[in-house]
Amino acid sequence: MEDLRLVVVEDEPLFRDLLVGAIVSRIPGTTVVGSFATGEECLAAMPNIEADVLVTDIDLGEGVSGPNLGVELRRTTPIRGVVLLSNLALPSVLSSIPQDVSGGWAYLLKMSVSNVNQVGRAVMNAAQGNMLIDDALIDELQSMSESPLDRLTPRQFDVLSRIARGWSNKRIAEDLGLTLRSVESVISDIITNIDLREEVDGINPRVLMVLSYLENTVTKTWSELQSGSQD
Image 1 (cartoon, rainbow, N blue to C red):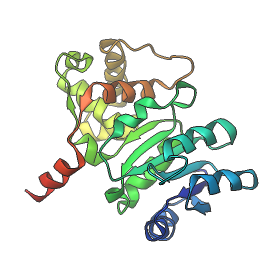
Image 2: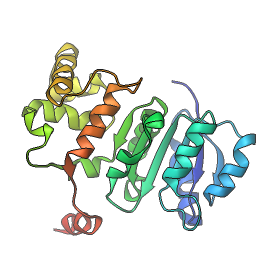
Image 3: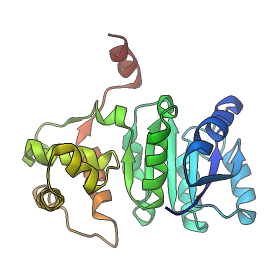
Image 4: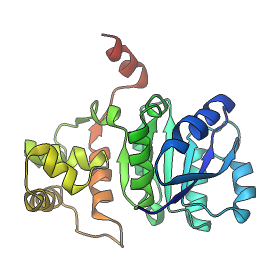
């Protein structure tokens, strides 16, 4: 596994320290090479930093937002992945990412940063050009009525939801008790059933599948998620 260099941008000092000290630094194969309170500070420092993945809060207060910072750095620096952190259950923000940088994004709830494995999976998937959605959000997403996802079989929907979690074909096969070839066949059927082309302008088909998944599902609000966790 390659070593990945991370830049962290978070406007709340305590949470930034948590990310750098207790979470990100514990992900095998990663190093934090920069930590900033604002997007502007990060942009000013990037000419002197070599980094692979940006980990940033979506809401950075006044000034550039996390998503806009990610887009700018993807276009102007070697950074190839962005992990967005938020208190809000709004993964649909990934659907608004410009097409030229649409691969290599992850969306995590801040409550999930204590899960080092999931943060590590988000970082790795972002670096590999994939798209990942927080497990807690996947559990709450539901297909819209009369959407292309209605054409999927339960097995196909299960596989698609695991792709959205950033799982590899091998892990999906092991989890569902399928052969690797069977998983590959199911993925091909998903692409056909929701009318996706295998490749669009060089975009990873897995990214296209996750984008379609996002565009055709709805999720509860963050307050509803909290309420449900207390039931």
